[in-house]
Length: 598
Ligand code: AMP
Image (tube, rainbow, N blue to C red):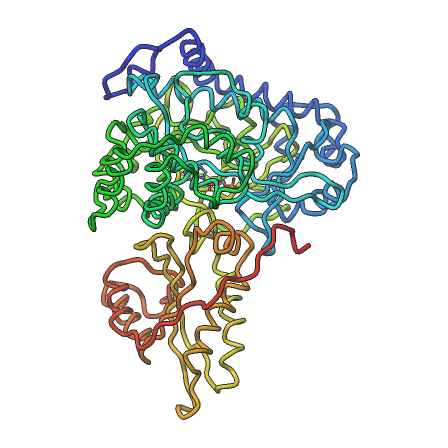
């Protein structure tokens, strides 16, 4: 197939008839993207023609692109919230989709502090499954022998809730791992995992991680690839090993299972795998008790060919740490997906992170692209923006992704900014540039400027009684230690130095900020342990003026200078850190419960 014309990596031929079929499917889709897109839109519009939503826009049975584009508005989640709320409350009439909404997928993007609820329909599982089924056939073109061993993947389910009418609301991966598509998947030598389903499906994050790590250690020599969905997840697993290797080595030495593993089906499944193996236990003890953990992944799993984790977008901040722990193993970003829709895959999965481009599969949804002009005025319904079709995007340009899905999102703004890097056949390939309006992110949390501002305001209420205010602030996502945490730099105006806020009060300010951050942040702090306690660093008076002087010395205009609300440029960090006069951490975890607040 023509994939060969693009690659610089030694290739193997397709491994099996299934792989050949998958590669042919990619060929067919990428050669005919415009025709496939036209068909997908027509299918979506004809099946959803009688939905309340589409009837509003008087398509009158038309399913062509022109009518669709001129009648149906581009929307955000907030625009759809009334419809989504009605579905959540139990209205089963065809509001957005003619097929029944089977559940809501809870996005890590939030609206008013809560996860967005994305409607989905049952058949979307097949579409997601189809995209997954393309990944290993492509990978096998670049890395051979992956059928001769296992993948150590740290995969987790998260808490699920129900809407007032009883529809499930859960993250898309939780929905997928709990589906029969995943649980009863047929044996495929290219997709054998060290983790049994019971370990992946255990909702207790400690028990799940512990048993997945234990299995990975027991089968260490069979492991050919190590991964997690996002880079932060894999690093959390390494941190877990740092904290728990003694107990893990103990279990392996004695052939018993840590009593903290209490889930009955998990205990049963893992107990069968744990046999006394003092030699392995000694090996783990020797490697893990060393002060220096550089290359620990390759030391413990010596046959690992690559790390399978997303390191594009916000996750790029973890590349140096992954390189450190893996002695620079290749990092593979295989796919690009969201709760709203799975988009596409990386046809050159062994390319270095900065070169990664994703090819959107035109069968997944109908895709449009809003040219991204950072200073353009906000969209208005009166002057609709000109959206570009998948086949018409131009190399080098940046676009915001807009999708129309089978499940009933029409011209929905995902919020991702992509840049076209080239074409594979007639299919454009995109570099993920960033998600709009994200200031701080450690794991799947996304905090925007308004949320940070609100958190600061809530926290400053605590120092008001000390006649103190925050004159300036900025923030930084500190990922040097795992888990990473938010750092907020504060310059204070203390009007009455004899009665300045105490240490204890400033610690409480950290917690007050955390309490007002969104639910994904708080879940990361409380349930997933993927985010560490928030830190406030109080800096000397005049620091932010120095920051401005520095920016101006580098060419910023005095008139237009704005305090950056997030920083990560080393000289600026060094300036800020050299002016720190006190450091405070959140003394407790904020509140979080799986249930939505509204
Ligand atoms: P969620 O809404 O929680 O399902 O998260 C989906 C979002 O995660 C996407 O809209 C992207 O912003 C981000 N994302 C997913 N896949 C990738 C990827 N391969 N590279 C960078 N960001 C990604």
